[in-house]
Image (tube, rainbow, N blue to C red; front, side, top):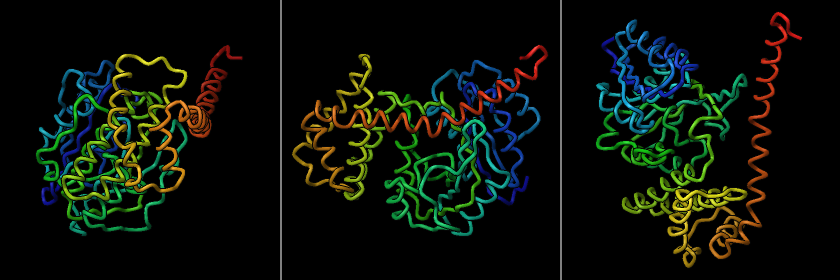
Length: 361
């Protein structure tokens, strides 16, 4: 361990990822940047993940394994931060893995550019299919932004995304900030606060993080309650940006909140809502209703964008008839384009293994 380099605290929440945790931990302990503190939070896993993590902790003194009853990924990250001693923080999802020079690259561009946050590009892994992450291209080479510029790009959420796991943070940015408990989209709930404190942010288009898309992951599950948590994070941002005199960003967040609200409403098609889901939908309706008389203040990207929001507020029935079928079509097309190829590959591999077995057809 090179004690001349700052200590980086790597926080790895873990819940029932037995099939993935080995590759994740192997990729962390093999880093060319060695001065790491690896904090694994076992969030009440019921599989062999904790046993595997215990074996790694015995072999590598940099690993600290914390066991807790299931409390969710937000609280696991909060617990990890409380145990962190490093001057930098990093969050790795336990089903993902990183390239060997991930931390060397992020620390180098951070220190050489005096930046508080450094970010890299990423791959998307869907079963055996590997491709560049689906987003507008990150600018070629190194991009250095002021904190204010980076905050604006974060709200645009195009090539600079709100993900937690592709970034290296100065730990001091998190002072007094924790992830909200019992909520999904917890990164959106706090990322704007972190970026607001940053003086400079640096981004490289080098691909160093490998994100695994799993059908049963929390964020890939499009449920009414899940979408409501996303909506809640965006309306909290509206209040925050108004409080720091960034009205431009507050207005953009209102537009985003409306889009999430409309997506959530579309999920009610062919669906019997539970009492909890009805509460979420009621809260969305309560927040959006007052904007019926304020639609002229919102910065629409297109005229059709404005018309869609207007119809959502003035005629719920017309909105559902006009837009919900299209949303359903888009979602089914997304399944065919992204998930089905991986499913076919999985089926082919399964069939091949069966044929190779003795007695196979």
